[in-house]
Image (tube, rainbow, N blue to C red; front, side, top):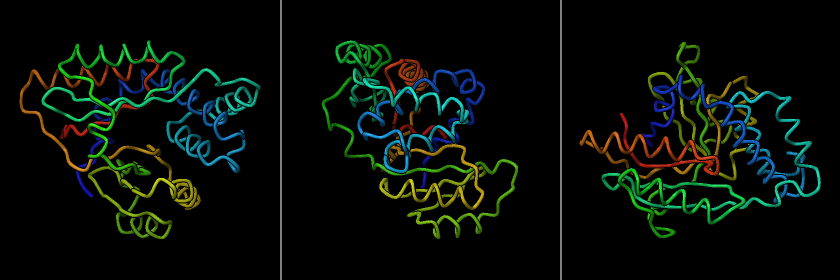
Length: 244
């Protein structure tokens, strides 16, 4: 597997990402609350979806105290009842495929906002299923190697030993792929070996990537992604834009 450049994209805008950390924690908290509601337990040992979200939270450096507070709140009766998960699909400038995962207490508000973002920045909202066929749902674990602490062969052997399906070395990180149903086990096993994650979550990984050559389309695509990610109802934005 090649071309998965999400971690590089994060690194290029690290300052901006740091500024959005509080907003990111809020979105992860919402995801935890819904995971408890739908999984019926605030114990990750008995709720695999919650375990996945907690792994994501820790990779995002969410403090343990914050996680505990969210879980305590989620265990309260009625928490998360108003939220529902809705996924939208569409096209960005130049036909870039875009998937927008939302969690909302107002379907009408969120649908209108997502459509507005697409329209404003040169894209269009499509029908359900219009681009999802060109993505694969995978567990994705990124290990930062900017300081060169890890040897590629060692990380690859450990990843395969822990149940990973694929391994992708890049200049300053390693990306590990696995089936969604194996994600928790792989993440736990890699963590037990002492690895710290730069990112760890279930992602929609493009089968193919699309380059944009037109400068105006590039600017519009960047603004579309920023607008979506700044929307409180949007949890994740996946796309097949090749930004390298």
